[in-house]
Image (cartoon, rainbow, N blue to C red; front, side, top):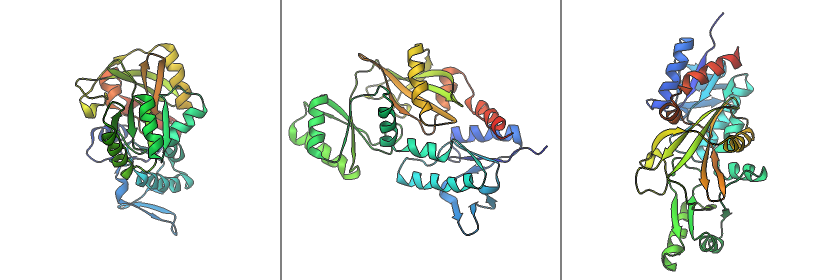
Length: 295
């Protein structure tokens, strides 16, 4: 029986992408890392071309990373993968599921509608409303709708001089017309990533702050550690990820004085946290899952 032909969409040379490609190659003998910036969609021929490959002829595509940084262009790349899906290629996770998560507002609105606990949040294009939110929250995190690892986020404090607050808000809005504003929560120096594969909870890892940064991301000096969240946390994360029909994802959560909150469900859940914090080779497990789904 022929082994399935599986491609990996990601960033060539990056650890997570290459680790996933290694696992695919070990199981199938095929290694195809796909950089979406070099993909062309031929609608007349119903082909999705990458070099000499027509991605519509693959059995499956696993998406590890769609672009180096999230942007509306990332949505365009996911739309290309929908053509492969229409041609019978199984995409992990489904393109529409990732589309709903890559935009922070879409993810947040879906979770809010399902009563998932989140930080107090205001979304607006009105700078007056934004300034009022800063006063109400006392300290507010302004987040781009498309970003990863806290890139592009700023903190605006109510105690800053008014001209400085207004300048920060207007500078942020210049690149982010729709402003996504959350209350800066008092966290215990860490947040958690709860890992799910095919809807099954695999475990959790912590991102622990190692410096003075207000966030715990590895990009800002944090480190991974083991974590054992309470069953109530797992139940909340299970409900949150279940809204999006993801094959693999992580749910970012943290403890507050009012209980656990969810920051986001990831469109492209990381592997390194599970490896360093949990000791799990998620790439191998993911490939095993894909093989069973495509058998």
